[in-house]
Structures are given as structure tokens and as C-alpha cells.
Amino acid sequence: MQTIRWADLMWRLVLRDLYKRLKYPEYRSSTTNIKMSRFDLYIKAGKDGKCVGDCPFSQRVNLFTHFKCPESTCCIKTVNVLEKTPEFLQLNPEGKVPVLVDKETDKVITDSKDINVYINNLFPQPDMKIDYDGPAVAATNGIFGKMAALLKNSDASAIPALREELTAELQKFEDYLKKRENKTKFLIDDKMMEIDCQLLPKLHHLQVAGKYFQKYEIPQEYSNVWNYIKNGESTVEWKDTVCKNEDIISGWSRHNIVKV
Ligand SMILES: N[C@@H](CCC(=O)N[C@@H](CS)C(=O)NCC(=O)O)C(=O)O
Image (cartoon, rainbow, N blue to C red; front, side, top):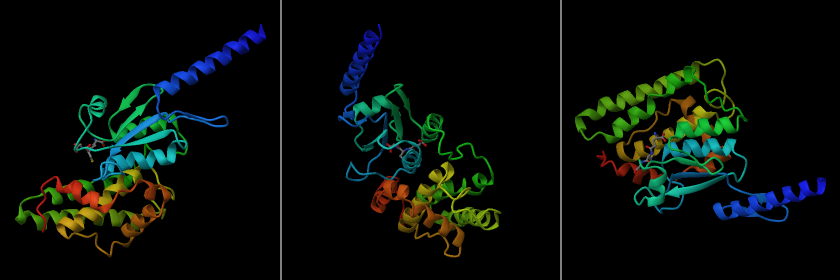
């Protein structure tokens, strides 16, 4: 009786292995090691159509999964947003990245926040404080909007006011970092949390595109903001997920920006 159960189990394992080999091209197997990428993560490609591109929402997810997902469970697929394939559009008819496909559940998720919530539910550890709703949110959530308003603006007379509004947001951020009780390396902890995965890529766009298109730079005296950026850039996860500066410039160029 026991032998029959074992034979049955072995057959099931062999069939499951065969099924996964056929269904998932990334499925690899060796005598000692069986690896399969459970997730496909579609992110924006760079100018060459292949390397990691300039989407801050894609980097938010890419950073988060670097911390959360066991190695090799996540297969990165870069999408040339200028030439989206029918297969990609079938996954997300809106045509936006990032997109996560969970091949185990056949679930497709098409928004950076939803993807991180989904991943966090599957891999609660390490805790990256995904539900954080404290003062660091209000201190930082206005920056990207003001930066986009400045970059996308085509009215020369509006530039001084838009620069001032952006600087006011950065001042708010600097004040928050300076006055908080816990002087952690990142916004709310000594390690990168989900809120940092959101903010750091946006600040990177501000540094590169702000300087290139508007000659706008984060004021040097905002030393706390600069230290925060440096702390992010010094992590392995940042280096693994960051795009080239030229891709940020070419990405924003699509908005027909008036360069000052
Ligand atoms: N709400 C979305 C926004 C994603 C988004 O806007 N992605 C841009 C790239 S940064 C995109 O895919 N645009 C499509 C295109 O450029 O054709 C998210 O956070 O995931």
C-alpha cells in the first residue's frame, strides 16, 4: 500500500515538472537545483529597448522585489514602450508599466502600488512598513507633482513661480528630516522601506531632468535631503535597479519640454 502511494507521488512530481517546463520558459532544472521564476515583472526599457529604463514606478517595484522576493523568483522583462508588443498589450491594454504576472495564480497586476501590496502579502518579511501613513508621507508627497509641473510647463512666464513651489516642497522635506526625533538613514528606518522605494527614484528624476531641462538643482544647503539621496544610492539594490541618466532625459523629452 505504502509503495503504491510513493509511486503515485513520484508520478505526480514528474508530471508537475513536465507541465512547468512546457508552460514557463524560465523554468530550469538540474540534478541538485530546481529553479523557476514565479513572477514576470515587466518594467520600462531604456533607449536601447533592453536595459532597465527610466520609469520611477517601475523602479519602485523593482527595488521592493529586490528586498522581498527570494532570488530568482522574479524574472525582469523590459518593455520598449515605443513599440509595445501585442502580448504585452494583452496583459495590460492600458499599455503602462510596471506589470506583474504571478504564474502560479495567473494573476496580472498593473499598478506599482498594487504590485507591492500583492508581493508584501506573499512575502511579509522583511517588514518594509507598507502601511506606513505617518508624517513622512505629507513631508514628501508633493515633490513629484511640482517637479512634473515645472518640467512639463511650456509658459516661460510661469517658470519662476513653478521653481519656487518646487523649492517649497523640498524645504518641507528638509525640515522634516532635520526636525524628526529618530535620525534614521532613510525616511522612517535605517533600512530602505516601501516609502523610500517610492521617493528615491522620483528624486533621481528631479536631479537629472531638473538640471538638464530647467537648470534646476536641489539647493546645496538641504544637506539632510542630499544625505538621504546618498544613502539610497549607496545600496546594492539601488545600483541594481537604477537606469542611465540619458534614459531619464530621453523619457522626459517625449513631453516636448521647453528647455531653458
Ligand atoms: N499608476 C501607474 C503609473 C505607471 C506609469 O505612468 N508608467 C509609465 C512610464 S513611467 C508608462 O508606462 N507609460 C506608458 C507609455 O509611456 O506609453 C503606476 O504607478 O504603476
